[in-house]
Image (cartoon, helix red, strand yellow):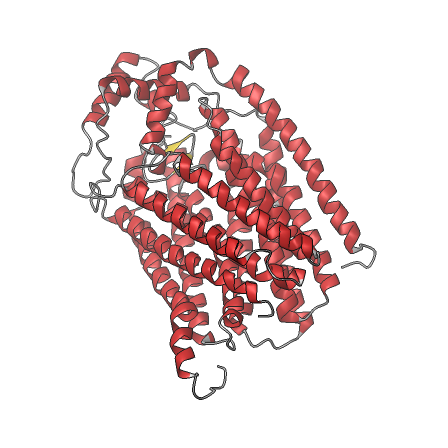
Length: 448
Length: 150
């Protein structure tokens, strides 16, 4: 750690990991309700469980991005963060908003639109948090060195905030409502979040492979160009059956097929850089997460996305368990693994230690990633059966659900394994270094 | 990567191309916006009751169990065409009564069956919600879903 103010990233990393734990716990509960439908049905209905599961995910990912930005901006800009104090206030405000939202949801206080359930005052608070961040980070960028990585990251985070403003627009016409709802949802995860992903991966590659910045930053511009040139019009694959004109089918087919390309380019980029760099970086776990992120994002977002994106296929699969399968692996591969990569890389520096406890972290990687892959397979099989029985043969929804009950059991099983894997990851990042630090105060121990 | 592509050229392609695609995207959504208001949805029938029904739909976050036009959670049936599935086209009064009776009877409490909560809606609220579902079923969705099962 070269700059003192990078320390504020620690708040965000710990906050993110806390919400990550909540997200996974609620996910296991939701998976349990699928096989024991009467569980909690009076106390905590499924819609509330799911709301907490998805919201906790989105908020912890955002919190991770803020933390990543506060960690990498000083190194990229070669200057301290404009106001570390403001960054800490921003963190607590964000954490408060997240906590208040969750408590409110439990008591049935929400605005009810999918993923945008936050009550109005919490949405306003989120905008204030975003403005505090953008001010602080932009001031840091302006007073320091401007690199492609920091520029792309900041452009992306500005757009994250701007696009969120569409969350305040709720037209009474459901079709119009849905069209602008995707401005937030699609243009985040299949648009500007990919810029965040590419720039953080580029930062990690510079640090861990030692490849020349000029080369990496040229790649970065190519990757983010591919992301937005395909992703912006790729929104068309959501404008198929919601009352939008028919021409979106063609636009969606062409551009969302191309959405696979940027993810593939990130795989090539990461492996090529690691191979060419040939440097033996001590933080093996961070390298594993970076490579794993590119690969799993390619499969989850790229391959599983393409699988049901063509309008002739989507006509039958839209809104079945196929969508759930894709959603789970895409979020895990692209954004969960990205955050865990930068956390794993940054924490040893932030804690002032050599890379520690790589084994536990890497076991966590393999267990969680395998379980997420298995979960995706079970949901995909469930979705294929559901599509055939319900959309082709016309069997009623609840009858079909009984037919695919076995897959929900297997999904719950993989969910429990994910919980175990995530516990190992969080343990290796948070708990182990704490006790290790106490031991090493006296005698210096060799790094693992 | 080719030596001919410089970093500043790549940067200019990124910013220029992004603006280009955003302009096309905004243009098309503007056109789609008008298409929805004039062609695919029935603005004349978007009554205060339908709007009230949409807010009831949101207040109870129905979308976190059900899908509507295929979007939402996948825990409970599609409701974009529930009006059609309940025979609302042939017998509007019958479909309305059946939908209201269904919601009044929840939760079923049957062991091993997914439970829908009791939202304690008034008779007027139930009517508004049904109006919203009826209005939604009349959106021109390019013939989606493929059949009545939703």
